[in-house]
Amino acid sequence: MLILHVRARRAVAALIAAATLAGCGASPSGSPKWTAAGGSQPASSSAFPVSPAGAAPSGSPSASASSSPSAKPTKTQTAAAPPAGTSYADRLPKFDRPPRADKVELPEGASVQYYARIPTEQPVAFITIDDGQIKRPEALELIKQAGVPVTLFLMIDAIKSDPPYFKRLQDAGAVIEAHTVTHQNLKGKSYTVQRREICDSADKLGQWYGRRPVLFRPPYGEKDDTTLKAAHDCGMHAAFFWKETVDKGIVRYQSGNTVQRGDIILMHFRDRFVDDFIAALQAIKAAGLTPALLEDYIP
Image 1 (cartoon, one colour):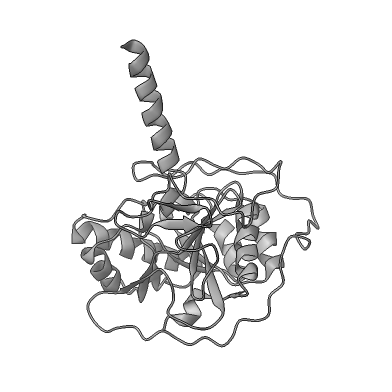
Image 2 (image 1 turned 45 degrees about the vertical axis):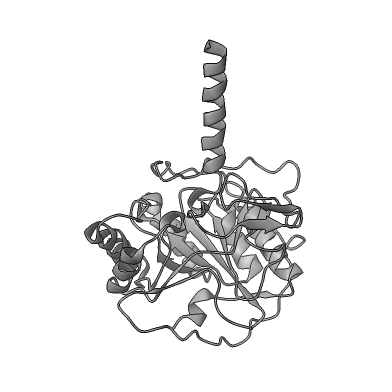
């Protein structure tokens, strides 16, 4: 009996660890299956099929611990800055300038629209980066050298220890949007709680970065009708899910095995930031698409 009990506890622990692998990229219940060339499995961060696109090089640093709905934001992790003059040119694909954006027609009403993909036929995809606990010094130079647009959905409790880090990314061209104060799962919470998480987040980011966010991503992608109404009342123009995720240098797909036009790609500020960012770019390039700025498509 003791042996069985120990084995059961180990199995539960393994499932919990796997379920938190994708951080706030955990898929909500009832969302589409994540598929790849090798088959499909239920939409769960513990069972994402792995695509060969963007496979991480051997010897890369280990991934960071990720967030889960019950986890508190981790303490800021720092690392030595990369050597001056570090170049990523041999790993970065080249892109033409994105086309002039065809803006989305947002529906009128008391709630914001929720997008996993921008409805466009233009050959573009969108890189979004969440949270902000782990502040790798390489990120700034990498974003500068890549020269592609990115949107940062930042969580206040994760970034409050070092707001200037993200100001440098903003100065390099990144656009900062809202991702709540505490990263709690909003689904099922009261309007008061949800409004406070969204509005206070946007207000604080506006104070720090000189522009109040107008786009919102709910933690873990979990939302309900109250979330979309609260986001609207906080001045958000739209809220976002995703079609692909990137972790440990590996791209995982919700459907098929390639990035589609208008897809929104999710990654995080993690230890393997360099590998994840380059894997996202390589997947976009392989699909014949160009990275575009999410904000250009949302009026």
